[in-house]
Image (cartoon, rainbow, N blue to C red):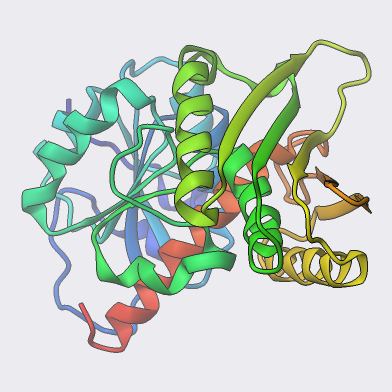
Length: 319
């Protein structure tokens, strides 16, 4: 199960000429970070698209389980080397990889990290496995360089936590409820298998980041036509919220997310004596995803930000 490359004429840019079966000739601090993507589903392919547009990253390998799967065929069409056989096949190639993005499923992630850890590569987990350091780039992105095992919580967590974190800075939160609504077409098989993990991991992250009392998370997959955009509604119960302060804090949180996910918008923010309700809508603004797939866009955008941080740290000699 060895990796294979496309002919040079099919590739999208020069770094694609690297043979994944060879080590880099030198540790040039100015080269793009070499990354691999585990999983060739909707999230994995959007990651590849974003990586291909990043000057700081180059995708040297996309890893799936079946050579003839639609996802791997699409990865080849995008100019990527691919291999089947999962994490073992990735390790077997001997590829010199700086960062591995895990876009597979939560049940497999622990094994993936166990096998990858001895290699020295950084793993960025896009599954809701609840392992590794939880990172929300606009909240604690500076912590991403303190560990090699990073968790992006969930797409709902990436959308909701910046808002809840902003609320918690200005008021006490006795209860937080998060309702995520996504188009059913954006939820692939792995996402559907991981829904329980998604709910539990998102709730756990809200507690860790925001010191909230009771936390409840719900997920709706809508089959509506046309497909609805990704929406997250945060409802918080409190006793001491100042409407002007809260509105300004939420707007500031949104601007920080928009720096890497421009489709992130606050649809509404209402504050009463004891209740705050904020609705976030996220649209995909990339080249591959439909606009309603903001749930995929926000987590892959966050992943690429962390990957680019790793590349910058490498260039600065901190790795």
